[in-house]
Image (cartoon, rainbow, N blue to C red; front, side, top):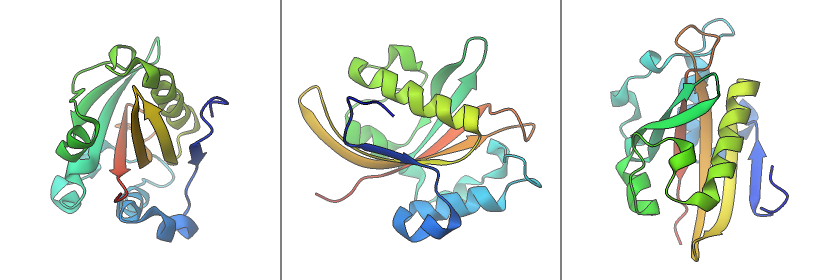
Length: 159
């Protein structure tokens, strides 16, 4: 990804990687189960009741095109607690942590362009504060083809 961020790994997880995803493997399994004959699942394919255990760590982002932009639609309470603010209805270019904007845009753009799940593991210091987390990005498409949302699940390792 970014040469300056030596503590970030980005991979396209497969079924063989499930054990290494922790409880985010449930989210990847749901996404894989809801694919329409090779197409991408829609947001409507997911019932929040099926994701109860993960809801506080789910973030849903709207994908807008011409130009490609991203807006935080829904941000789970565990995410807000972990990072200390709520970016709901915020565009990435207005994200409060300026230092993170390029990274966020880069991984979301990669998810949209490649149309595959991405697993990010990151350790980073932002504004003098240390963060370590895992993030599973899942492309969603109302029409099965054009990515119009990204659902992300977060994992926050115990200190």
